[in-house]
Amino acid sequence: MRIAFALLALLGFCLSMVAHVATLLGVDVREHVPLVWLLHLGVFVVAVPMISAMRKWKSRSFLTTLLRGLPVWARAFTISLGVYTILNFIVCFAAAADGQAAEKDHRYVLQDGSRFVRELTVEEYHSRRAMEIRGFSGHWMAFYFLAFAVLVLHEEAPDRRNPLHRVSHVRPE
Image 1 (tube, one colour):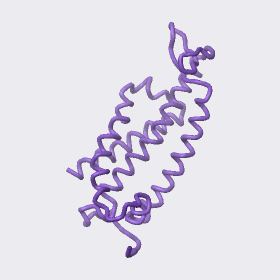
Image 2 (cartoon, rainbow, N blue to C red):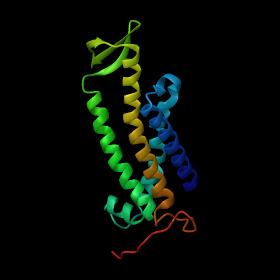
Image 3 (cartoon, one colour):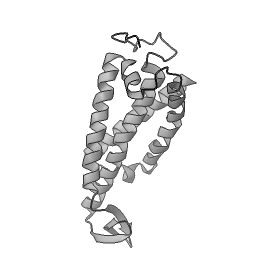
Image 4 (cartoon, one colour):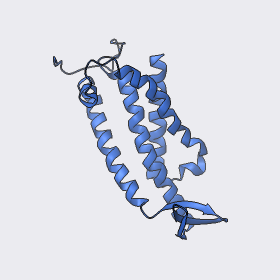
């Protein structure tokens, strides 16, 4: 069952990356794939077995235990993805500071909560919606990869015969 959730996490990561790259290219993913929000729900599906696996770790320092138990390539990727997720969040948060794109009375508008800010062009509307998915997909990628890493790549994952598993060092605690 653990492998099934790990494969689901890997699939979620790949789909999130596709959505993310599409938004970087200016595509309003929601326009073409309205079900993209299912990736948001999928994070919670893979989080349950990930948390269950982490509860079995002897150490309670999540980040240290996670990073020490990963192969070198996965450790570097996890750190890079974490830094990218934070920077992406800052960029997306700043871009949405003046409001969100919405459709009201067959017009595209920018609104801050329920307050009307201004009317948007079609291009602005789709650009803002792409930025919204970009913000979410950056986080989806991080959470899906963490689930995959914990379930398959971590040194405490049950299948030690995994060819992707190469821990560079062993540190006694």
